[in-house]
Image (cartoon, rainbow, N blue to C red; front, top):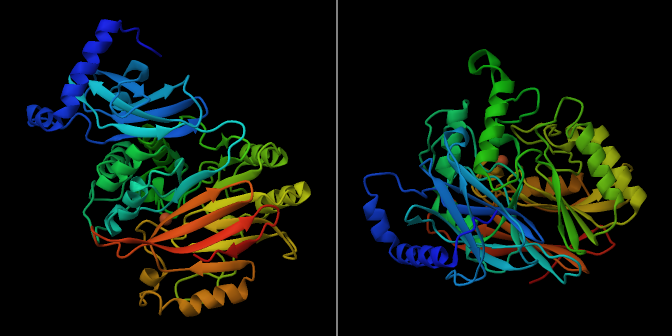
Length: 483
Ligand SMILES: [Fe+2]
């Protein structure tokens, strides 16, 4: 891991880094004829109590140096090393750093020759007793539909442990309503997916978000194609777009290259001390008409539910877990079979495990449907609640007023009322606004706050806190919080 630089080497390296960092503009001028070396920013992800994953992307095949420090000016460097990348992984760089202190803020940067990357900030996970944790929660960022101002809002917060991304980090189609995109067609090949990921990583708000907080990400369908599964996708036509398996493999490979996530199996569990654990599900890679999770992930999830070593159990599910009867509305089916409603057997197994355990401490965190919800998760009989579910809205992707082409707020109120009337376990729904959420966890409660943007098409949009709901420990019920 450490490259064994001598003390003199280290001092020289730091001196050069400091000079270059202090004159980033002149470094830019020196390379003005070429693409900037670190055009796609830096990122970190999947915090452990003693480690973190670092990410960047370079335009060269050079050896890349990295360092991690306790301070922003890199006077107290605690780990450093070097790694190589190349065309085989689209010049993306990942470094697994270990030996760090728990619940601690660190700064990191990379270097190629004399060019230094932007500085990133990250934080390791706590271990043991932990009084509170605060996450950002995000999903559904369609580049072409608007500006990622809500990401920038979370980047400006300095009180987050990490940001949970619940999927639709990219979108595969080409429909430049507000911003133009690359490539200028639906992405299908590995080169296409890499190009779209690269585009996203040039967004200033998203770059700032990654540089400010570690991300814990899973994917949904749009990282491959609309309504995707292991065996095909609504948004894929094999007759004109080739075999689905080839496209899914390309999408998977590009995602692992470009996201600050450990490579291999995407479903995983991260621990935040004894306060909570966070189970991130992969509901696309193993999905077939019969199962949303696949047998292996399902068994792993149910075993995890039976383990009670954490006070709260957070479950990141890209699509809505709770049942939902959709009232009659133009363009909408009565049931959305792309979410867990299409897989009642898998859901029943999870609900039964939650019910058997009787802990009432599971909280589902959900994206996908571009709207804000707080839900009591009912058991099969709908007589009691076994968990709660909080759904964060989209950063920019169309929500209901845009789908239905009705005026925001006034146009959707009747549908919101009809949803609650038809689904008594749905306690709160707001169909129109874009934004982000934060999730506060203490031993006594889990609370979600929704923050909405004034206008997704406005690069200078403002953000306001709009709603707040919580679950008190042991209740498995959501309740509104006045603020
Ligand atoms: Fe989405």
